[in-house]
Length: 466
Image (cartoon, rainbow, N blue to C red):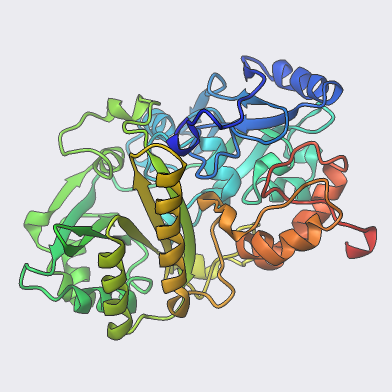
């Protein structure tokens, strides 16, 4: 269990955990679950911020995919088949075994499961160059609600579209994805710069300029910003990845973002797989660490998200800094958009958040204390920051599915109004204009609503709504 918030005596427990070894085990479990009226929860890597892959208020069991983690890399045609129980770390490592100039555009946390990441969209540090993970998926194998094993051809384009960004667990059990590998240089440049307000640098001015330029930089350049509080001071950590040598990276940064003050000493030139290690581990850590499936520091956590569409004024940045100081334990993570994301249609995949976004902003809250009182305290901090962000983010409060947040709304899947509740709350925030199409597909492929959770794609309340 990645999120220890649900590791409490009062948390509902599964009837069993099924660790499938073969696709037939998945097919049998669907048939048995229907006959015994058990809900199925599907776990890939387990990085599920609201626990929908391992907690339910109905009698349920967990289908744990961790044994189904085979990865077949074909460098010749630049593709790979990866089973959804594999982690991103395992995927990156296996690709690098075959080629140091290929990889897959996805996230930087190595213990995240491939199944969950891809089914919800999957952004990462190659997003501005190659788009999301789902933009680079070319086939899939899925077990549907009738136990049939389908591929892209047999499932049809609508269902394939739905499971590449619309949440696979609403439609079936995704067994594997065929992904398109992308090219990277043999050496890339990675840099990390930490700035606090006592370093004779005005962090407000730097963040202000960051929001002016970060989505307009060269597509090969990705600059993430993490804001937190250290020793009663606001700290900004800028993580830089450039697909090329440090000299070119420095020239681009000097021309477009000199306020950051990036220097040669800040940069290290490494292989792409080594750069993945640097996002989470110290320099010199071997790439074999990517094969460790165990989340290193299990903690309690709450997440939510939104999108910044217009640069925030210096006054607004100072306001947010003040609120960060007051709340103290929160972290704001800003991931830049722009680049090729501006060129991909919002309807190309269920993930609709494309052109018009400067950064995706994540509110991250972690804590170690046990019990409901501590959980309520930290969750309320998250809610406060979410409200403080209101003037600076999307007017409709858009959100990213893989930063699932029950505060956006949940449904009782047996209720007649579940469709309208979902549409008004999380459905339109996660999927915007793609929500209606997802509902239509759901009604065709799972009319009994076997695959469901508190924020799944609901059935329409009437055929007239389709």
